[in-house]
Image 1 (tube, rainbow, N blue to C red):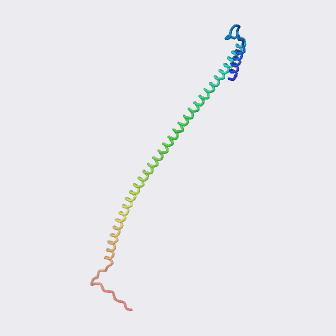
Image 2 (image 1 turned 180 degrees about the vertical axis):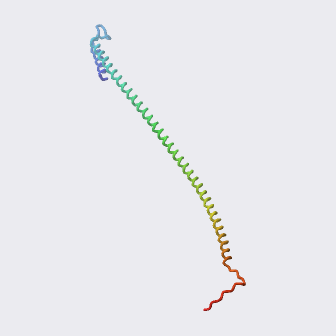
Image 3 (image 1 turned 180 degrees about the horizontal axis):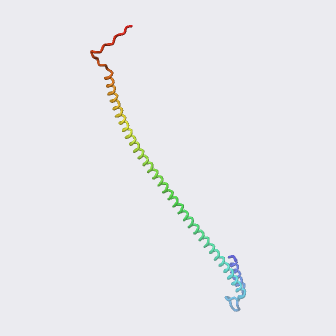
Length: 168
């Protein structure tokens, strides 16, 4: 029943009271038809009962809606926290990757410098060995050249004759 029904019943009750006649020899007491008043009161009770049932249903629905909204809010909060945790972990993975890449780069640079330094030392040793080898080779060539010139120079003895000149 609608709210207006209750007010209608109350208005009907007021009309019945106003329409009733005064008791004999009284200006304040009225004679009211009990049957009509009781029917109106019964209608009001039924209407209130229906209103109360509707209110209880509405409150139950409201509670369900609130519970569902709270559950949904909790799920949203949980998802937001999971997403935030995931983002934090991804951020940490990113930071760790950058840090690791920097370490690898630094280590590679250090290794390259070490290799370059060792290669320079090795090249210097090879050049020194080559220089020593060529110096020794030059000395050996000089010695052999000197020997060759000494063997090639004829020793003049008195027994030997001078070659004759050929005249054409």
